[in-house]
Length: 278
Image (cartoon, rainbow, N blue to C red; front, side, top):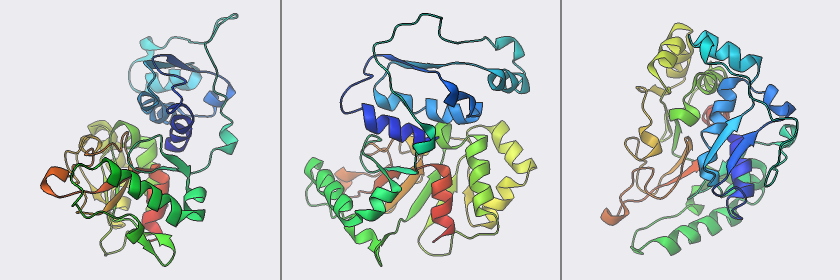
């Protein structure tokens, strides 16, 4: 879901295509997504600069609400026979690849293939852009020093909040990391379920234990890493996160005090795969 969201944000943010509009998600692709998956895309629509968003509903929506004790809240939502729009974004879900949003905005999006193929150039360009925005030019900061043997090495992974911490995302990460290891070096992986009921279900089904056995740290249901309240990376560290935003200071660093770190956004599945592959 984060891959879909970052692809959309990357396409529409800079040109203001959906600014102050309501995004409506319709079409056959919606039916291929579980409601949890749709929720993970939807919480990122704010980063496109739209005012709000609405999704067509179907039997999966109905089943989701029923499972959560709210069957009376289901209502069928579909476009009318004649509907007029200001514009359209066509998304072929079969073409969406794993994405990464480089610092310092979700719209600074690349496929992970693009990043790997042009690693030094993209890191250098991002690094220079960050430095140009710093009022304190004396803070030592580098992204290109994260290239080790031709590959990007990161120091931290976070799966959290309304974007990353829902049941489906954390369960997928647990499946990827089962019988794997985050290693015992500088890399750390923290997981924040989106709610206590989600946390309880992950515990009951063994997913929390699988993550902990792999070296991940399970934390309480909290969206803190989205706004810099917890899990501040080390100075000059690089964090990959399935959260909503990677704006300056959202990771909790304090440039005014000479401490700075950077965040990129990725899907929970890609973060888990990164951890498993060292």
